Length: 248
Image (cartoon, rainbow, N blue to C red):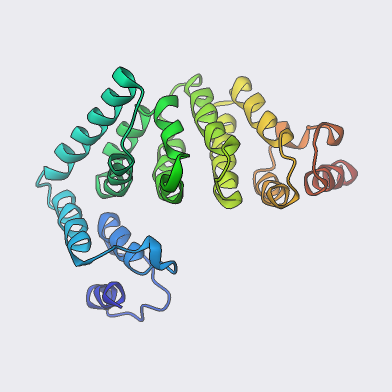
């Protein structure tokens, strides 16, 4: 209710269907999280909400504190992973929660530096619940498309870590696949396309197959529709591929 009250104060509009028109993205992120349908995804207490609002206004007003904070976090995370091959879940979660607060350009710059070791931390324990929030920002970098063609394969491999992991919800896996397909098609990177095909062909669960078939339909690229149905392992994916081939 507090999040909805913030929205009404900012816009004067009914908060039943919230839109980000005219609201700075850093602040809208705070409001959205405060109003999340899942109570476990909301801020745990008023102190956490207050801190998030402070970070949002640091970014909006250019006070600089948020950039220093997130830079320290990622440096500490990368150092722990490189030196001792370990990580601290709370640091990862804090990083994910802070990332949407920084400017778009800084989001993109930070995401460029996140490689395989960091991705493996996202699929551990209760960090998994924060992966959709992270992917929403990572997708911004992919859509910006200011990377070279070979980096598309890095993106696809990073997304494959999430897609292949146990315990990751099917909807999150589908989003990871969608991001990988976007990067591969934007850069026309054949190695990234092969990674996407491998992800699709590895699916053995029918429920995940339904999610993946939906992604394939939305992202109807030639390298996706060219997959032989016999290469796949679930009926939903095979049915989609047969439908495409019969249509053509």
